[in-house]
Amino acid sequence: MDLKRIFNTPNPIIGVVHLLPLPTSPRWGGNLRTVLERAEQEATALAAGGVSGIIVENFFDAPFVKQRVDPAVVSAMTLIVDRIMNLVMLPVGINVLRNDAKSAMAIASCTGAKFIRVNVHTGVMATDRGIIEGVDRELLCYRRELESEVAILADVLVKHAQPLNASNLTAAVQETIFRGLADGVIVSGWATGHPTSLEDLQIARKAADGVPVFIGSGANTENISKLMQVADGVIVASSLKRQENIQETIDPIRVSQFVEAARRKADTEW
Image 1 (cartoon, helix red, strand yellow):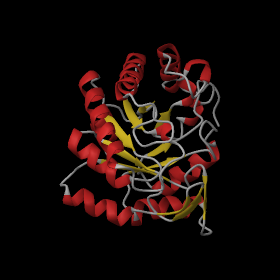
Image 2: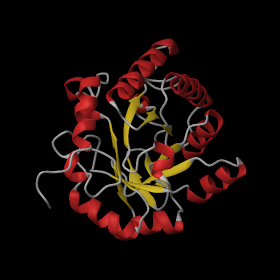
Image 3: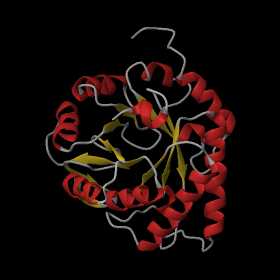
């Protein structure tokens, strides 16, 4: 995966647009315009703050569908992604939760988005939605069928889940890359907003053998400069929200502060 080609930088900072509840989700409010307007506001704030890219997630659809989301969700996300791509001049990615990688690939391929995030690409994970199996073969074949060049960023031992096999981080990274053919891997803390450990990033970086490694959770202005000494990029959401409240909207000032910190070398060597 050529990060510089996609993001115009070898160390991308990817901000997340958390979509308000979409049609058919438990908290759907009945007005897609409201969802669209907030998504546009957050994408604009991220772009103004200097991020390298944006990823769009149906975050507030929880509790999520285990795998295949309703067609209304796909339609809504396609519309929103298209609007965002016409609003900001940044590479955009898709994550369809909990693990609908095929729909994410379809949306990305049809809108011209550059990458997708897949929570369970390889292996088998026990989650709050039950047992979720990897989708690597189905997804890779589908990408080929679509003649798409959308990059696949895959979580390794994804947050909010436990592996059903005895796989350690090194083995999981290597399987995700060399058997699952992911273009990049994501390493997270145990849950949304919980820091990714420096030790885990070091292990993943060594195992990845040159394939990009992303921080997937818990990055903030205090820890990001040190974490970015090891990681190739970061996906960030919680710490960019107003008052660091996940329910709030993106604060462009926080985005600017985070971007500055991410691009600054740590004062101390690890």
